[in-house]
Image: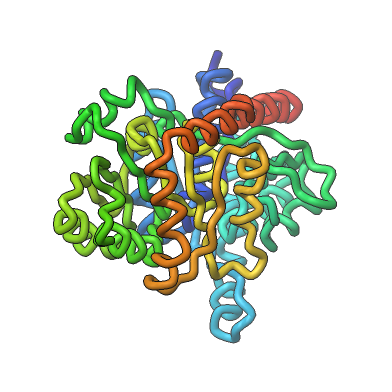
Amino acid sequence: MSAERGGTIFFAGGGTGGHIFPAVAIAEQVLRRLPDARCVFVCSERPLDTEILRSQRVGDQAAEFVAIPAQPFGVGPRALVRFMRKWGASVRAGRGLIREGRSRGPVVLVALGGFVAAPAAQAARVERAPRLLVNLDAVPGLANRWIARFATRVVTSTPVQGRAWSVVPPIVREGALGRGSAAECRRSLGLDPFAPVLLVTGASQGASSINRFMQAFAGRADRPLSGWQVIHQTGKSDAEECRAAYASAGVPAVVRPFFDGMGTCWGAAEVAVSRAGAGSVAEVWASGVPTLFLPYPYHRDQHQRYNAAPLERAGGALIGTDQIDQARNLEMLGPVLAELLASREKRESLRAGLASLGPADGAARCAAEITGMLVSAR
């Protein structure tokens, strides 16, 4: 198959790993179907996007990506001015990419949501390129609601009330899937292969309130982490403080701002504490790790809580409320986590609930949609 016949797929989304990692997952599956297709990631100018994408491989190639100057929409005067100034430039950049892609063959734009996806989708609309919206959150954001109005196709990885969108299972990249046994994953991280592991993650940007909660939890007088090991992804802040807290409590821990290979972390874990972004929920579903979700507390629509709700309803996860305050979190969430660590029966029950959900093969289903759209665009 020639590169022209494979076509070009632009994946638009950035600002957080929650938009980028699902795009990587879908691109991996596209290349299994169309090995000669070209996958290009359209991201923001934030350093995090570059950091993530430089570490990714899709198929046997390094991820190809282009940053556009998109800015988040805001109602404040300054935020609105920044958004408007960058909107036109971002749309023009997107149109240029689509025209360049068409010189090689058919083009499809896949929008993953957020402030990068909106101008890229508008560019595809103007250029009359097929557009697939992949909605990731149970409560769609402003950008997704707008893109859905003129998308060629819309799929969602969680049912959305009032929307007749095609529902697919969670979307998980290969790098987030554990390879080998739990013992092998633990050993590769320098941990005891036979001692249980608690994974703590605030996703790609970290979560300071979770970090502070875990520092206090590790120091509890009753030593709830006795016999356990910890893997903790902190984000850019708090790594040293968390590392010191675990060391003071005598708890073996691997603490890093960011893990490239989250699959190894999930493969090593017996229990997890996690935010409930769509990507994190998908990884819990796929890995089958009993998890206490602590949704991001500042979202007005509380969409992270809705993201995790299907797992809770299936008896596969717990959802707590991040009180933000360290002492309040220790009081309200400490007993819940301590019980999860102490009760093998509780963990087995949650694990069985997760297994009942079925395979997390949403990426393959999205790839099938894209393949069909490429064929139609020829």
